[in-house]
Length: 189
Image (cartoon, rainbow, N blue to C red; front, side):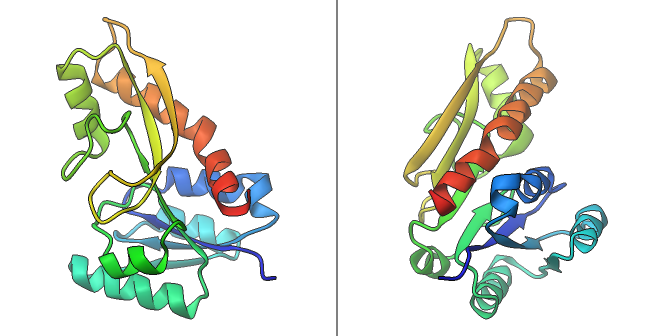
């Protein structure tokens, strides 16, 4: 049996992609390809240093999905991980990777999920609502934003003195702590 090949899709800095690639239990059993919807010289250099393939996608959402599907098929990708990828994934990719495509969301779903709820928008909404806790949700991807089967959730307390930046930092710490391990369990058990 071939080892798992993970396509990590990013739209931002790639911090979660770096953590997954550097996570020893994943690195020793899986291979990676990083697909970015934005120019990212830093993650490209990171991938080059590790002899990993990095590809930049271009075009509108439909064109991106065509590229993702083609690349994943050509590269024999077994799993797709959305790590800050901000584009909608096509129903065809979701169907072809059912139960093998995972996303991380910066809130405790179902709260603060859906179209337009990503990154700082989520943290601002959590702050504005006066929530006393927030967290991360790692879930399978479905045709509806942020409504796939929940694989794991981790929470953190928000104090009354926390501002949006502090909330965001607390959530990032949860991502750093838990996301690579959950991906490992999802991909290899």
